Image (cartoon, rainbow, N blue to C red; front, side):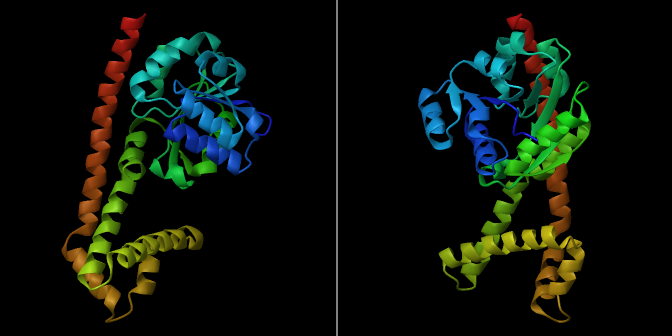
Length: 285
């Protein structure tokens, strides 16, 4: 699907490089089909050397040469970058933003054109090609456009298509913030292993591998987590004793509350970001 498409990345920092790496290493497209820009010339040199893609410090060059343009910039500078490149954008190009907290309506307002817009929210696990990514489509984006966006982000993990509104905030509370919850759980499991006599190194490895293995089993078996839990928790055994303690500590309620709190905070930050985004656009016009 992407083999004949020219893909441009405006911003080649951590997430931009993760996507470039995913596309090239998965062979979803050829290096010669990718062009990326950044203000840091040393970073561009490194990316060009590692992935054999084209690089430039000129954002407008990327916009002109690309059929799909991924804006991989920080939310605070997205408005100015959109303004800079707006004249090179038209309906022939698919525009993808991964700027956190900036909804499609604000991007459309900043560009002042009817364009094929897609908003995407990957998470930190894109760096190891295991991102959980949400994709939302703007008014003028087609099913084919969504398929192209999914093809790009499937190269760094798994994607879901959602309606933007509150669901993007729910995604942020669950999968955007979720890795932090898992890191805490793994750390707590490792601490428990140390308390029980395991070395710190072994305990952390075992905790991490246990979470990885459980997640992989869930994905590949497609069984409900409750069913798999029941397979581990034999009558009168160790797992059910541990589960009882987790239930006493309110693990389920605490996790649900954490995701609800993160979702609400995402909504608040998004509203603040939209306000700043629109105000900065007015100042620049």
